Length: 502
Image (tube, rainbow, N blue to C red; front, side, top):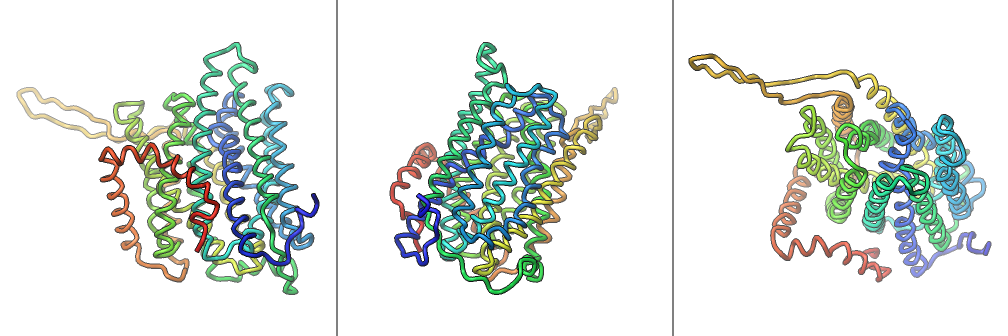
């Protein structure tokens, strides 16, 4: 049993191929746990127990705040040098905390529930970040650089697809519990079931991590701990990447924690609708991972980011137009457009942002480089939702109305005022995030990556690919492919080496 925790002096091709496949399976169960314990489910659980926008922002900031733990985690990894053992142990404890969270409503009164939830969440996220630091170093040394983009694309495709479908089932469970007051735990009892299901998925992820081989860590180069941490900050190009990723995390985390709040409270949608829209966006993610991966291979990660970042940023600008000031005939179509554009953009940034950080981290120093990246971007991702939560409460009673006045000169002068935009509450949050997104795009321009081409070339290729897919969707065969492509993706998963080779 303990032999499974030990690294191998040398890995052969069979070890690497097996490791690539188990990493995909780990991602499927890990992502499923993540979607069932975050986003709309965490927000819904908190709202069911009386959380304000400020508390929602605080809860969403706990995960990024815990990234600070990656700094001492670098020392732990360098000291112990058993990355798999660290990953499996800390992941088991961090994920196990959800057993307590699942039963919090039964164990503590409502007035103490939210403070205890914040503390337990932080401890869980802290353990998971120690796990993440060791995992990043482990994967960087396990996966050949030429296979990184293929591995990330496949991990994200499988994980996002399965996680989206399971989260949809969770959304229906929440609504069913609300309609049946006699069920255990009342209206919020569904969250106990959902969090327990997430815990099972987390343990299955641990099982596949245990089966993944670990190469022996390179011998230390004699640098001290603090010198290793300073290295990324002295690397000028990596420092520019940090500035971009920090500003991107500010924009992304300023807005996204409040998408669910907006849909649940402002638009009065059911949890099934909220999760359904999120799943739709995630399926768009799945569809575009392989296109962005192909373009990153053809051009570069930065080239894809130059197109993907503006797409997501533009989607933030659409949110205020979904109300005028209430739901109207264009609300649902605009929400669909928002989730399509955001899904396409997020797929490109998630895939190529992470891959670019891996690519610019030198071999053998990935742990320190990625830990500093996690710390710096984590601070931004922590501060953003907390400030946004306070801002959302402050903007709650404020309105900005833009209208157009039409005058008709006839026998009796008449005038009609047509509202064109009504900004209030969370709308201000999305507009601020839009400005932050533009700034992050500006910072991306200074990052250097070999092979980067002009943004216009990638944009033309991306638009051509989207047009080809739209033409295909317009046919009967295309519609059939929409329904069957997810199942084809899963069926092809039976070939362990499919898509993971050179």
